[in-house]
Length: 183
Image 1 (cartoon, rainbow, N blue to C red):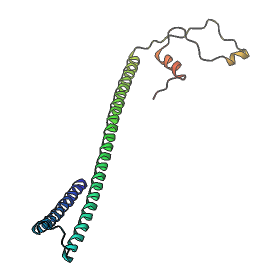
Image 2 (cartoon, one colour; image 1 turned 45 degrees about the vertical axis):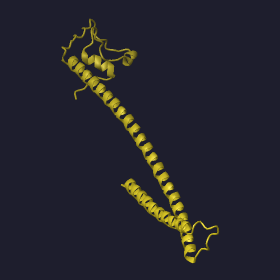
Image 3 (cartoon, rainbow, N blue to C red; image 1 turned 180 degrees about the horizontal axis):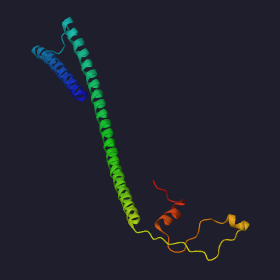
C-alpha cells in the first residue's frame, strides 16, 4: 500500500513537471515567434517590464523544475533502496524458514526413531516377563550350623548362594543393584 502511494505520488509529480515544462515551452515558442516577426533584427529590442517578469518567472520555474527533478530522483532512489532491502530481508526469512523446516523434519525423524526404540524395549520386557521363571530349590546343607559362629561370619553376606541359572528377577536385581519390588 505504501509502495503504491509512493508510486502514485511520483506519478503526480511527474505529471506536474510535464505540465510546467509544456507551459515553459509554449512561452519560449511565443518569444521565438515574436523575434521572427521582427524579422531577425540585428539589434534585439529592449525588454519590456512584462518580458522581464516572464524571464524571471521562467528562470524561477526552471529552477523549481530542476529542484523537483532532483527530489524525485532522490525519492526514486530511496524507494529502490528500500525495495532491495525488503527483498534481502524476505530472502533471509525464506532461508531461515527452510533451515527450520529441515530441522523440524530431523527432530520428527529422531522422535519417531526413539518411539520405535521405546516400543521395541517394551515388547522385549513384555516377552521376558511372560517367559516361565525357573526356580531352583536351595541346596540343603549337610552339616548343622555350629552354635558359636566365628567373628568373620558376621561380615559375610547372609543371603544364601543359589547355584544354577539366574531367574529373571535375580537377573534384574543384579542389573539394577537392588531387589525388584512390586509396583
